[in-house]
Length: 137
Length: 81
Image (cartoon, rainbow over all chains, first blue to last red; front, side, top):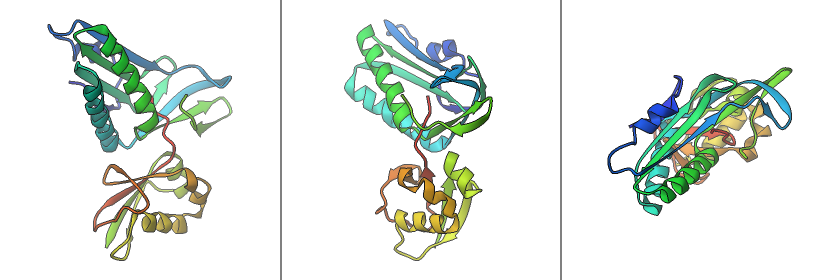
């Protein structure tokens, strides 16, 4: 089971493999990657920071909530911290279920809730400076 | 009683430190600890209205009571994912 904050490179296929199984007819995996621009400004890299033990508690609570709302089998969440270059994976979420609908819905719920609640922050490094990201669209 | 204050992201930048231990009177709440942090680091006032608080790794309100050796974290608006 992959669950938590890591300072090492995330491989979505590994996160996905950790939830697979003979009972899972569907695995939905979301990967959030570092994009080269935000609000029209060129981004050079991102620097992520987390309150790791609390973020992991939030992940666990959100998985419990997802389980109460959808009949899902297994969930894995991995979120990176440290300096990330363009194209690197910042977060990966995999949800396994018997059928696809609940895996899609639970995965969508989880990424939205993580962005809104988990104590994780990113500093956007631009060509002319850096700042903490203020919004999470 | 001793309380550990943790600063993250913009709060850490403005406070100039990531953690410190403060002495608060018995009966202190999360608000008491926040006030202490704002007094120590006036630069934090700029983002004070946006801060969420957590006590011992759980979201808290300003009324949440503190006990000795609790950890209170000052959390700016999150931006993970």
